[in-house]
Image 1 (spheres, rainbow, N blue to C red):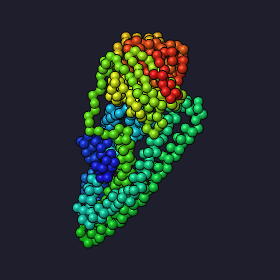
Image 2 (image 1 turned 60 degrees about the vertical axis):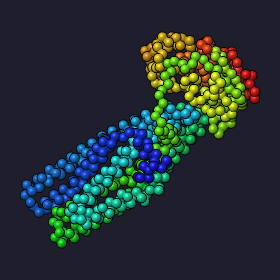
Image 3 (image 1 turned 90 degrees about the vertical axis):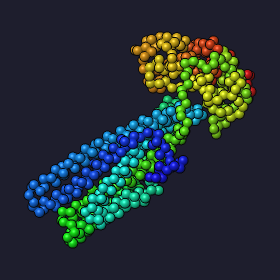
Image 4 (image 1 turned 135 degrees about the vertical axis):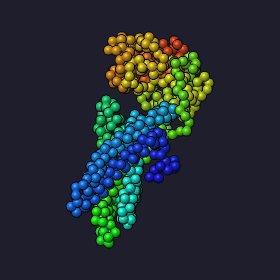
Length: 558
C-alpha cells in the first residue's frame, strides 16, 4: 500500500487524487471505528458463545449464564447495527470525496489550455470523470477502510488470545499475517497488472459505447454500423478478459487464506488442549482460545480484495491526472464577459499553417480581417478548415507562420476574451432557453434574448414554447431540431461581446429560411464592427461573406 501512496510522480497519483478529494479525517476515523466494532462484535460473539457453551456443559444454575446470554445478544445486535453505521459513514466519506474530486477536475479542465481540452472526446471525459472517479471512491469504501479495520480487529483478536494463552496469541498472529500480508504479497504482481488492465478496458467500453450511440445516425449513413458494433464488442471482450485475469490472483489469495485459517484453528486447538491438560487454563477458557480464530479471520479476508481495489484506483488516479494534470497554482478568476475587453480588433494570418499533433498541416494562408468584415474559409472535407479556425482563435499553436490580433501573436488568453468560437458541435445545455443564451454573456436580459432570437428567426418559436424563455431544453439540444439548434447557437454568438467571431459550419441543418437568418446574423455582427470568419463547405453561403479563401488552393486571394 505504501507503493500506491508513495511520492513518486507516477506511483503517488492515488495519494494526490485522494488529497484532491478532501476526505474528512473525522468521518474516515468514524467509519474505521464502526467497521471495527462490527467485526469486533463477531469476534466477541464467538468468544462469549464459546465460553457460554463450554460453561453450560457443566450444568450450572441459569443465573451463572444470565450475563453471558445478555452479552451474546448485545454482540449479535451490535454486529448488524455497527455494520449499518459503517456503511453509512464510509459511503458518506466516499461520496463527498467523489463530488469534491469531480469539482476539482472540472475546475482544472476549465482552466487547462485549449490545446489540451479540445482533442478530448466526450467518451474519454465521461469515462474518467465517471468510472475513474467512482474508482477513487471505491478506494475508500473497498480499500483503505477495510484494510484499517483488518489491522484493528486482528490486533484486538491477537490481544485477547495472548491475554488468555500467550502462545495462542503468537500462533494466531502468525497465521493472520500469512492470510493478510502473505496472500497479498503472493498475488501482488498479477493483481496490479490485472487491475490496471481492467480499468483501461472498462474505459474503452464506455468510450466505444458512447461513440456508437452519439454517432448512430452517421454510422447508418456511411454504412459503418457494423464496424462500430465490432469495436464495442472487442472492447467488451477485452473487459471480460481483464476481469477474468483479476479472478485468478483473487482465487490464489482465497486459497492461501483458507490454508492459514485452517492452520490457525488447528494450532489454537492444540495450544488450548495442551494448556488445559497441564492445568494452566480451565476448559471454558480453552474453548474460547480454540474457537477465536473462526471469527478473527473474517477481517483479513477482505485484504486481498482491498489491495486489488487500490491497484484499480491507482490506475484510475493516473488516468484522472492525465485528463486534468494537477497544478500548484490556484484557479484563475473567471473572466467577466459582460463587457468586451476592446471594441474592435484586426485578425491576421501570415503564411499560417495549422495541424493537430501527428497530422498533415494545412496549406499556408495569409489573410487579414478588419472590423466589420466577414471572411469565408472553404475547402473539401478533411482539409483542415476547423483546425485553421482553432489556430486563428489561439486554441492551437501554429504549425508554421503566425496568427495575430492587432499585430500581437494570438494566445490562449485571447480565447474567450477577445475571440469567440462557435463550433459545429457547440453544446446546448439542459437548462432554459435564456440560460443557454447567457452562456455568451451572463447579464443578457429577456429583451436582449428575444431581440437576438428575432434576428435568427426564432422569436415566435421561443414565445410559443410552454414557458417561453424559461422552457428547459434537453441536454445536447435533443429536444430541438437541428435547424433550431443551429439558430440558437447563432443567437448566442450575436449576444457574445467579443470583437472577433469564428463560426464553424454555420449553415449545417439550415433550410432556406435558416440560411436567410444566418445572413441576417452575419450582417448584424458585421454592422457592429466585429471581425468574422466562417468555415463552410456550402458554397451557396459565400454571398454573405466579403471575401473567400479556399484551402484547396496553394495560394489565397487575400
